[in-house]
Image (cartoon, rainbow, N blue to C red):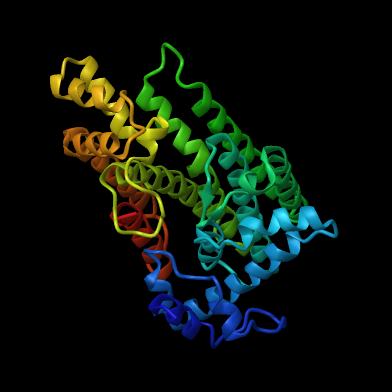
Length: 366
């Protein structure tokens, strides 16, 4: 058992969330780990116990929501849920619910909704990106083909919609608008910027839609269904939008610089696949402005990267160029904006954890 798993397990004893039987220690430890930046949760005995128990119940609800009497639908739907994941979105819903009455049963349902919505998008993303692996396992389209993978994503989103419809019109509206932005973000990423649109601004808007929108909704739903003060909603939306962009910008730099983390993604993957990322967009801007060193690096990036040697040379050149540090600075600026948005929240472990998470998304190695 890892140290992280141990801290979660220890936090699993104590206060109970409802009359529902508490999950066992084994169930709590299985597959649920504390993401970077949330150590303060485990350090607080009461909060750690409450959130750990809630997270185990969310896991149970996820599996119940996707279960299907049809064997194929059941297998394909369980594929990503059982592969694990950080569960950042439901964790944010649960954490933000502690700004109000976290024991309300609607909070757990909202947490399950945001994770199911996220999972649905992953099935679609992996098909569009032709990704061979997700969370260390072969992607659904690699196992069952593109059509089955896409339909599975649709099915999971349908299950999320059923759950959110039971939470009422406001929640349904938030989820629908969030899913609209997820789709628009993917569409805009696919077609690229208009001729009159700045590529960097276009890219940032894509990140806000594809990642920031659902993270923002996660915190917002936690506040709503815990009965937290209304003014906290806008705070959490601004925070979620900013921290989501910061997370993706950090991913961009990690692709260039590599790292020792557990993402399973080798340095230069995005370069080889021709995925536009902030360092490359800034490099093209610099080259267009007359930067000869940027033009030299671009020649490597735009060349044949099929060999590991060519890819390594391009990665090294881009990593050494100032645009990579400029991209780190941009990620940190978005993280700082996320932390600044938290100012109206009361001091305490919730605010501290949200702030620490914003730092962690740009301080990770991979």
